[in-house]
Amino acid sequence: MNAKTPRQKMPEQKPEDRIKNFNEVPLGYTPEVAVIEAGRCLQCKKPQCVEGCPVNINIPAFIKEIAGNNFLGAIKKIKESSSLPAVCGRVCPQESQCEERCILGKKFEPVAIGKLEGFVADYEREKEHLPAPVISVKKDKKVAVIGSGPAGLTVAGELAGAGYKVTVYEALHTAGGVLVYGIPEFRLPKKIVSYEIDALAALGVEFVTNRVVGLSESLGDIMKRFDAAFVATGAGLPAFLNIPGEELQGVYSANEYLTRVNLMKAYKFPEYDTPVIRGKSMAVFGAGNVAMDSARTAIRLGCKEAHLIYRRSREEMPARHEEAHHAEEEGVIFDLLSNPVRLIGNDQGRLSGVECVKMELGEPDESGRRRPVEVKGSEFIIKIDAAIVAIGNGSNPILQKTAPDLKCNKWGNIIADSETMKTSVTGVFAGGDIVTGAATVIEAMGAGRKAAKGMIDYLETGKW
Ligand code: FAD
Ligand code: SF4
Image (cartoon, rainbow, N blue to C red; front, side):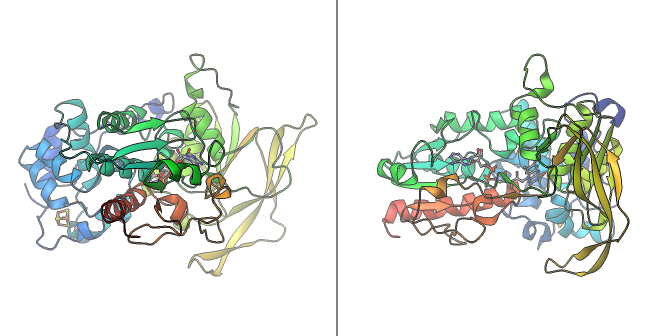
């Protein structure tokens, strides 16, 4: 085996089959194929791949274990740095992180680091469990975690592992954050997330669901009962287009649409009778992962024409390459350099069309991307019966409204120290999307790890 062995392809459900189901698209490596792929790694002395990983997983070390058929040894190495490898192996943007830096990529294709990570995590979950960590010393201090996405789950795991009593408060009826309400089953099966949550519960973490901190009680009330708190409430406030017609029946925010389908299982009708409009011709506005997830979900619910409408060009699309590729394979129509200007309704107030205008790219704007400029007189109409707005999310504002001392920036993101994740309120830490704005799972986990360190330091020393 050597670097010239081609990168091992991941088998996938065929597009014509998968658009009829919500099962996961990639089918996973077999142990034999994983060992071949692991054998491609050069075991670099100064591994650039590790530099590209936001939580600095010891990538060559875990790959070496796979190459030697020691899959449990591999997962142990990964878990030294990451608590959700089965999730990250599936949804991390590896192509712009670890794999982008892999030295093999200069001449050949990079090692499939993400797929190997997913493989060993699945192996451990399905075939041979690692023994549960032993908590050697129980501490008498109590910690509250508010929000149960990847940031909150990471802190809960680290602090419970260090012996603290952890209670997680979650607004929704199921824990997991975007991993359960946003990312669809065909990209991230929910049994994987519930396995991780069960493992935390087995460590002694208590989950309190249906509890919106800021409505049922304030952060101040929580701090009367706990010695420290970690706020990880995420960026779940949808942005809208602010164009005429957005109030029409049939227009969803991506959050609402995906929550109805994923968390509330509308795709399992009639077993679950959550209502959702199953449009035949739909528009999705935006071109990030959320937009791709929405369009691919719509297709699986029977949409014949799913238009992805985006004002810039393919090059600027923020979605992962793999997601855009899968969406195209499944028949999503990319209407690029097009911008919606008006949503059109029928006389019953239902959405019936969208008027768009063509765009061209001008000079770069402050984001470094070329600014889209309207082409005068290029308006056109697409007939649609449902639309999904997926143009971004702002920070969840509810908790902050009853925490006047918690400093936030002008976008409502909580201000936290970039190393310790301390906020302006003594004992309160924050991290993940609520601090950075909408970002990635691994960045949220990275913030969780930093916060856990900062919190343990504070709980041990009492120094702020
Ligand atoms: P979240 O995951 O948002 O979790 C926050 C939790 O806090 C939620 O469960 C929320 O209900 C809860 N909450 C909010 N307010 C309160 C309150 N007042 N009281 C109690 N609980 C509260 N990232 C990737 O890396 N790869 C991808 O492929 C990818 N795809 C995505 C697809 C979709 C559809 C979406 C929406 C996002 C995607 N992301 C992806 C982004 C990623 O999921 C987020 O960056 C990540 O989940 C942020 O983690 P978090 O823990 O900060 O917050
Ligand atoms: Fe292996 Fe690539 Fe990392 Fe080198 S850069 S250690 S080849 S994965």
